Length: 103
Image 1 (cartoon, one colour):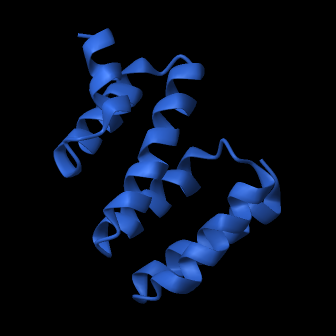
Image 2 (cartoon, one colour):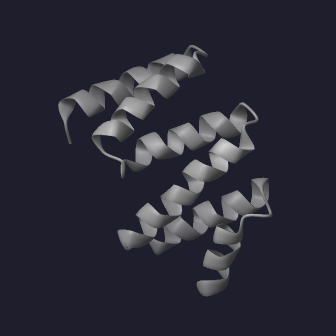
Image 3 (cartoon, one colour):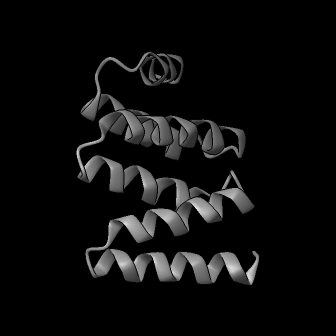
C-alpha cells in the first residue's frame, strides 16, 4: 500500500475523532482516487454518510463494497454489507438480489 494512502487514511481517522467529517471525507476521496478498491476508505465514507443522514450516498458506497468484497472472494463480508444496506434502505435491489443469491 502506498505510504501516502496510509497517511491520508490515518489523518482522516484523526479528523473523524475530532468531529470533522468534511475534512475526513475529502481525504478518503483522495484515497479512492488512488485506489478505487480501497475497502477502508469506501467503508468509512459509507459510515460517515450514514451517520450524517445521507442514506443515498451511504448506500452507493456500501453497494460498491459488495462488489469489491465479492470480487476478492470475501463473500461473508459482502453478505454482511448487503444486510447492512437492507437495514438502512430496504429498497436496495442490489443488496436484496445479492442476499437472495447467497442464502
